[in-house]
Length: 466
Image (cartoon, rainbow, N blue to C red; front, side, top):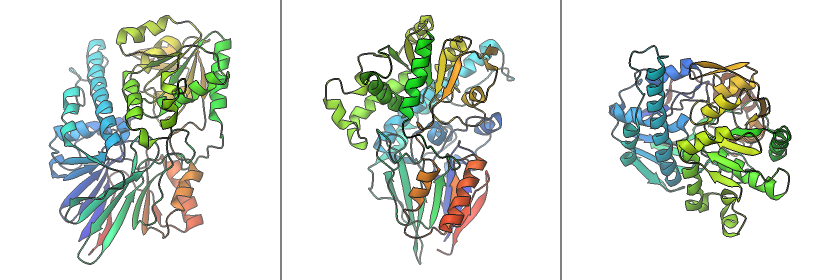
């Protein structure tokens, strides 16, 4: 049996993760992400899928983030009919994220048509909310550490990866006539000392390893990021402004709410209103109560005044009208809104309205991928183009180190050291070129691993005659 891999995304970039495994006549797609960031990357979402989606037998999802799951509605629309395997929490999060993604695609197409800034006469969404809903019946939930048979010769199991609720490391066993081989997909690995999520599990053996490298060239040396967060909020408060925090609805918003609750209780930031302006973040936050066993916050939910998601200063804003009303606030408030890289969602109207205000601030709390609006603002752009208008950037900007949901270079090395034997091949994925190459250098020099940084659409034969 010949086993091959084709890198359909997540190669020398942190977006569009999709890895196609072919074993005999079986094709399994691990992750099915949307490309985000640079225009060249986003255009890949519109290109024909490299193989016919109807040929794919199953999709295996490591976790729910859009760069790992956001292409599913398009895949189903174009003929995929197999099962989509994931953990229970991932299945629930995927439903929330894909509906939101479909809604955003529709709104962007409508807005482009209305304002006439699309090159297409009738701009169309990549997919709609209705397309997103067609994914849901295909979701197949799997418990952590439960081994299931995908095909006669393929088994998979999921292990906790940290990162976000439900995120998993995937182990795939492929059995040939003579031997069985293990493929391990790290997915996105979380931090070892995250205040909410458990650390990633270590696996002792992998013949082939696909390992993320988002922070492959960075060390997050700051162990108390909440102190920097508090400082930024206090400075904005003294200036009479509003602190706006672009934060992903899944994971980052909940972590920030945890820290804001703690900082207000400890008197390190003023007791001012906190507005969560993201319907999706509100829906996601409810899941933390439901999936109590997958994080560390269980006990705080029981104590009155201990639940960071029920802080007395916290206000959840669902409706568009409520969101717009926040424009009238002139100071003494904190607003959290998605998306975390400022690429879409309600954060755009806060940027549009508040970037020109010197007293306001934007506090970025997570990785800003190349080509995203968040990255360009942090890189010192003087204006930001939104809704066809150049908006001047006068608000103060902050970047808080250490709040990422991704393992840094030291933690990635620590996780790699957990393998009892060297993988035959390690592919570094989901990282920009410099990050992947920096981690590759350390893995080669310190662990003597055979490391490859693949190119987009590159093919490899993993085993021949299995």
